[in-house]
Length: 322
Image (cartoon, rainbow, N blue to C red; front, top):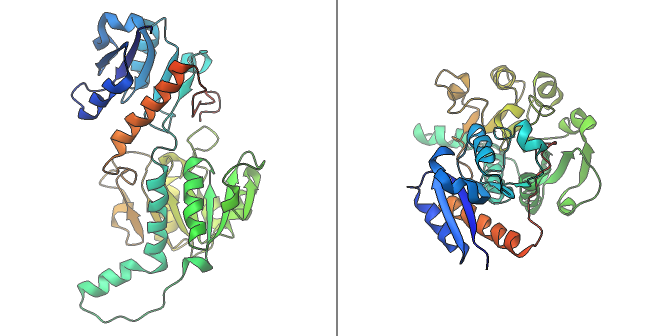
């Protein structure tokens, strides 16, 4: 069996990366935080695993590794990694799409229940030792709209449908695909406002591209019901943060559940921190006890496919950005 060198851009002290030793016989691992830190082994690299590599470091690895045949990114979002040379390169790029989607789907349901049952009011009443009787909503009577029906969107739809919700999805290609069994209506991108008007919950699960940046802004919030709750479990800049802060503070929409933001960490001066109608998680909704291990396991499965000549999963359309 031929020897294969896997280059890893990551911290050699990261315990989870030790699992990469399970890649099999004939594999040489070289792990470093930077491209230069990979040393002379970089020249022999045929696979690059970007565990925590930056755009600049990936570019430098490509310069140092003329034999590179495949690049895998731990994360699902690629907006911070893509650059012209990589986009135009024939080297296939894969990502971690799907590895973290289940937890994000659960978080969306958590957010929906948080508002449907008015958990903030319950907590406030408990703190005041107040016996507060009020009406709550059932998710089965409500509609969830998903902006970006990729792997995360499908995980959300599956869980929403299990709760009996009416599920709407918006995506660029409306041709039938697996996962549509959990969706009542699929909308094309041009019909975004028409879909938003129907929703009790709007979930942003789209990748970040030039076309999706600030896809949800003032006009979109104005198209929603005043009772609508907006959630973001995709990429922060898909939502115009200034616009949603205005919509929330003015009562134009009921609330928000936000896991990702335009700037992270979310600045202390952001008005979102002080809003009672906003549930914030620090980009941690997919950080399960096993999330890092799961990422390595997926890479090892991908590596086994690549080594045996089988088709890779999650091959990215580098020009589209996802």
